[in-house]
Image (cartoon, rainbow, N blue to C red; front, side):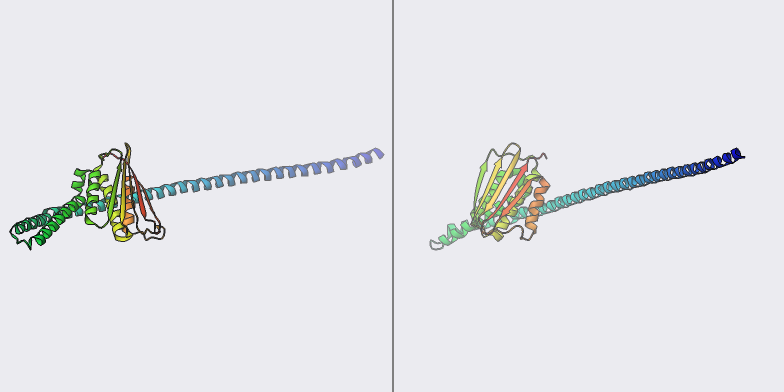
Amino acid sequence: MENTLNIKYISLPIIGISANVLQTGEQVISTQAERNLIVYTIIVLVVICALVILFFVVYQKRKNALLLKNIEQQKQFDEELLKTQQEIQEETLKNVGRELHDNVGQLLAFATMQMNSVSRNATEDLRPKVDNASDALKESLAEVRAMSKSLNSDVIKNMGFKATVENEINRLNKSGLIEVVLNIQGEAQNLDNKKDEIILFRILQEFISNTLKYAEAEILEVYLEFSLSELKIKILDDGIGFEIEKAEQGSGMTNMKKRAELLGAEFNLESQPDNGTTLKITYPYRNA
């Protein structure tokens, strides 16, 4: 009897231990499943985040590419518009130049011949006045012819950039509106791209026109520096100057800058109040 009671007493703790072990195993299994679930959840979240980031990067690249394309298209449109405006302006100036040379020039030439005829038959007291009128007509005829050359792009192409600038400066000096000094360095190059030649001259004309209108200048200096690869143009006046930052970006200043950009030329305009205005252009030679 005593042995049987002892066996029962010993078996009860073993059963309790087995239950505890099973319960602990279930907890381990449950914990492992939770860990796996957490790992899977993290992996899914990482994949989703990666996909979102990838989508955002692709979207930004496409957006940037579209913006660059739009900017390039706008730039091309502006260049084509400027070229069209340039062609229209050149055609207009060409027609005006022809009219001045063919019609006004012929009328002045005829009037000069008539005045010479009158001078030969005039009395001594009238002859000085007739001669003065004849000289004025001759100067007007020379001015019209010089102006027609600077307006007609065909003449500019035939004369070349250097000769056209010299013609314009001689015309200004004869007009008495301003004193212009020309300084040429290096051996003058004939530009292969005649369109660029015309545009460069128009920029120079625009600066001179603005100087005569606003600068109240007395002296204008023009420097042309020719090298084997580029042409440097520097033009400055001794006028009243202005603050570029505060100045209104009028059509004259805008046209000069846009034309320089069209040529791929470096454009630099400097000015200060009471210290004149300076324009520098560096033009790398381009083929036609």
